[in-house]
Image (cartoon, rainbow, N blue to C red; front, side):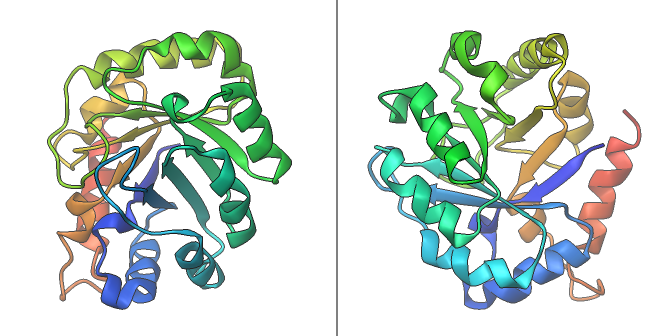
Length: 225
């Protein structure tokens, strides 16, 4: 099963609730929530109050990607705000195992995020505790960047590790995902696809829910895998 996870970072914030409702009604599976702190990454986005505001709009999974440092302080706030999955970068935690435990203690699923230059060796120690592995195919901080092809090799390696573990762990990709490369990314092992500008930038007034055409195009490409 493939999951499409639009990143609200690229949505129209003047009508965020409508954007979220439309993208889910168009066939998306997960709402991806990018949190940047102007410290770990050179940008500043949204916090727990926005997550709390959108939670009543949908029962869909809210997947919170924390690009913040330090990370532990903010985890309980997002759990309380309604997050289902909370993922973080190993560089942002002094004790990775402890942060994973904190996320789970708060009732959320835990994910670990790998930047293009972050080694996969962290998985040697914590894969059995994770619910999601997120491979960044751009350097984090800004939407609309181009896909870094080396991410395909990382996906393939992580897919091998997940399959060998026998555990139900999502393998997510984030950055430069579009309809014209989503099939190749799926073949490398991803099962969950974050797309921001590729979805929210392709809305059509003629579509019943604005994003039907673009999400259908992604589904059609995934059906070829």
